[in-house]
Image 1 (cartoon, rainbow, N blue to C red):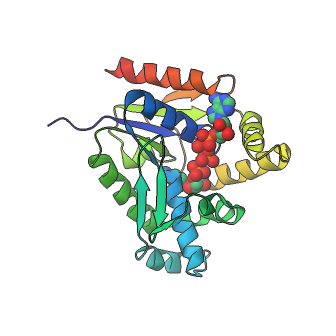
Image 2: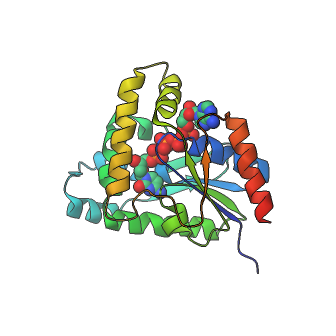
Length: 220
Ligand SMILES: Nc1ncnc2c1ncn2[C@@H]1O[C@H](COP(=O)(O)OP(=O)(O)OP(=O)(O)O)[C@@H](O)[C@H]1O
Ligand SMILES: Nc1ccn([C@H]2C[C@H](O)[C@@H](COP(=O)(O)O)O2)c(=O)n1
């Protein structure tokens, strides 16, 4: 039996991983997994339980009891925590501001990496996006992409998405999250070995999707 095709897409916050991954998955008829949504959903559930997120031992204990479910249709991905649809609340400022704390707890990462590997193994082929997919979750993935874009471009895109807010403040917030994500002890954000760097700064979303589909096709 052949193993499912795995396309691993990693990169910093706001580089376009979700939009690009969904587009690539739709074009190639693959499933899609947003692992950032899983870290966010875990953070949302811990906040609901009143867990002190600065207490990593308490976070590790509470995380064991939280159930997460990811729907992997790229046209309509879903995320549930403890049976609740959390697609909207996981994008709140409270969750966005706290998720890096939770993502830095090694036991949380073990739990979520196990879930991610189970989803990959149960798929017919999948695009998985996050920060540690090509390095830790699926180091044997035949296609690894490290998607980047200039901080100013990322901030401008994010601000536009949020209705034209303060781009400078958005850029600062992205930089803070990148700093935490790339300096944590466990599975820090970094270009995975063997990954192809795609810089989307001057590319449209369709051009990025075309480029990655081309890389997948070339990998055979
Ligand atoms: N190549 C592109 N050109 C223009 N806009 C883009 C491009 N790629 C993504 N975008 C837009 O940039 C914003 C951020 O993209 P997206 O949410 O896919 O990034 P992300 O890397 O998944 O972010 P995060 O890490 O915060 O989850 C979205 O509004 C998206 O539509
Ligand atoms: N594989 C992953 C995915 C995400 N994270 C962390 C880092 C981010 O700050 C946070 C939310 O991710 P986003 O929705 O912005 O992509 O989750 C991680 O550590 N590992």
